Image 1 (cartoon, rainbow, N blue to C red):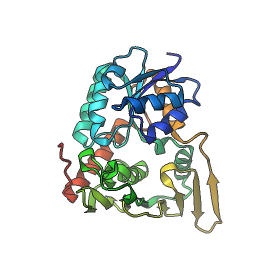
Image 2: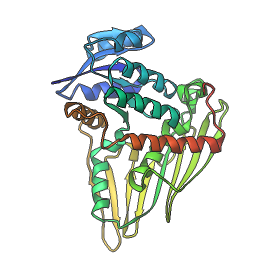
Image 3: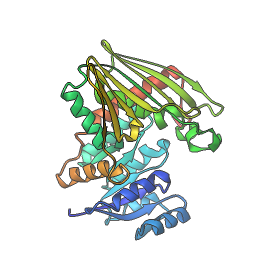
Length: 326
């Protein structure tokens, strides 16, 4: 394989970000796009000079000239669309949240393993240069032993109206799977996949979806306090607090800057801007795995994906949050 020929399922906003990144990667090719609305798919294809357009996902995944598929449909449909791709021999990069629960995530992973196909959750934050730099700083003991992580991620999306995807319970909408997975990821990256205790409270809105939530993850004497919202704007920062200092990460989900405060030393700042839009790093990593014959990422592992799903399951249980299709 000299190039990865990509198919895209879903022609929404995030697929635009994906396509723009792919166009800058020499070993990647935009081969096809599929959407339930054929006109939307045609407009998307025209915008990015994509040669093949499908109004059927099944037709696209049966195309032998497609190697890998990027899935950017609502959370509620990720499981169905990943299975469709895997059953037709396609490698899969799927947007977060991977599926709506741990059980379905396990099923998809088992199928990918049995078919020896590459599968990865598209958690772009993990692949960013700044994320890797922060990991280096922690490994170098710059801030000492991590004792706490505080992450807050919230937007006021109420102007979109209750019929928007983000508020639609039938599409697994709500703060937890839309933005909450980011704050959970921000804790598991640095404190590990297995908290000793998970505590969650949430507030539901008029659609029955969770409009905001707060989560506490306990790891022995370490703690992560995490908040997410889709009806209130937050500061949208992360603080990693250690015994010798602290790292502040503005806009942590797309981090390009970190402010380091070491005890008894001056505050200093590190800036690592994206080369394109940030998606190029996860896409590049995914393709590297394919070229090397791997079927699992060593940055966003199956264990990482299942850990986040297990935490969201526990949070939903405590919020009494059930999706109508479950």
